[in-house]
Image (cartoon, rainbow, N blue to C red; front, side):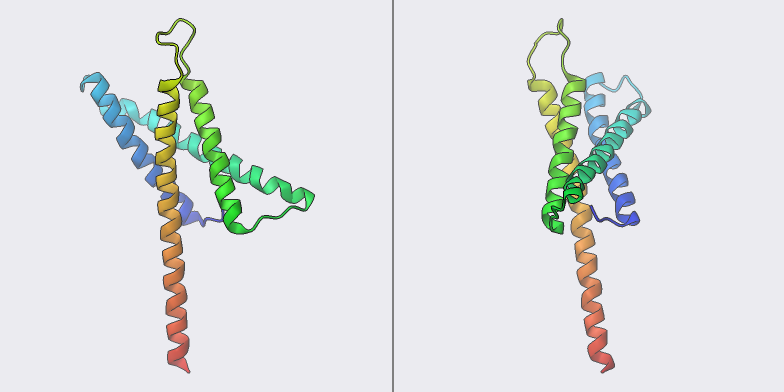
Length: 152
C-alpha cells in the first residue's frame, strides 16, 4: 500500500469517524440512550486500530513473496493486500465475538455478520482515500501538462 502520510492520516480519521458513528448508533439504540456517548469511543478506536494493524499485516504478507523473486505489479499487490487484511480483520473479529459455550443461540451468524459489516466500513474508508489520491494525482499531472504547453 503505497499511501502517503497524509493519505494514511486521512484514512485513519475517516475510518474512526465511520466506526464511531456506527458504534454510537448501535450502542445508543441498544442502551436506549442510558449510556453516555463517550463510553463507546474506546470501542470505535479499538476497531480502527485493529483495521490498521490488519492492513499493515496484509501489506507485509503480500510483499513477502518478493524474497523468493516473485514480484507483483502495484494493482494486484494492492488488491491482494486489501483482501488479506479484510480476511484477517473478519477472522479476528469473529473469534473475538464468538459466543461462549453457554450462550444461546450457539450460531456464528451474529459475529460473522458484525465482522462483515465492519469490514465493509474498512473498505469504504480505504477506497475513498485511494480514489481521492488518484484524482489528485491525475489533476496534478494534467496541470503539469497544461503548464508545459503554455511555456513552449
